[in-house]
Length: 218
Image (cartoon, rainbow, N blue to C red; front, side, top):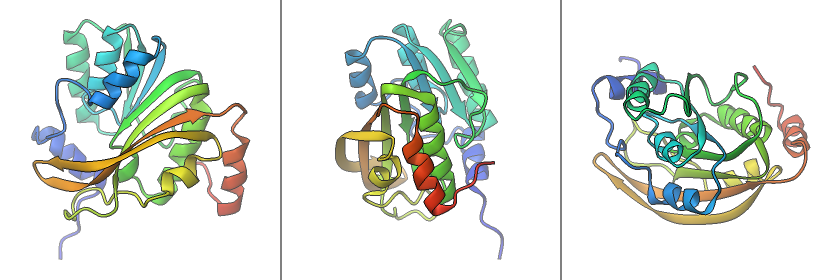
C-alpha cells in the first residue's frame, strides 16, 4: 500500500497543475461585503493562495500581509500582485499560519477562506493563538470553513459544529454565523461563514485555555 500524500503535497500538486477550482478573479461576496463597510486598514490574508482577497482589498486602499505554506501559491500570487501594480501594498509570505512570528500585531481585518478547516487539531490551537496575538481589539476575522466530513477522502475533513465557538471564544466574540452548502467541481459539503470580533484584552483567555489542554508552541 502506498502512503497517502500529505496535505502540503496535495496542495502543491494542485498549484503545479493549476487544478485550483476555487481560484476566481474576485473573492467571495462575503469578503467584498465586509470590505465595503470597513475603512481601509491592515489585512491579514490566511491561506491566501493566489492572493485574490489581498489584491481586491489593496486596490481599495488596504495594506495586506498574505500567508500561504505552498511556495507555488505564493509564486502565482507574486505574478498577480506585480501585474496589478500592488507590490507596495501586498506583502507575500511563505509560511505556516500556526507560526507567524515574522508578522507584528495590529491588524484590522483577517480573512480565511478555507485554510483553518484543513488543519490538524493541534495546528488549529496554534492558529487561534496567533490570530489572537495579531488582531487588534475590535478587529474582525472573517472565516469560511467546511463543516463535518465531506465525501472526498483526499479533501479537508471539515470542522465540527461548535469548534469555532469553543476555540476562539476566549478572545473573540462570535458576531455572526451563516451556514450554507458549498458545491464545487469535485466537492459538495456543508459550510459556514463566521464573523469574529477581537475582544479587548491581551489574549489571556486563550492562554488559560491553552494551559488546560496542554498545547505547546514551537
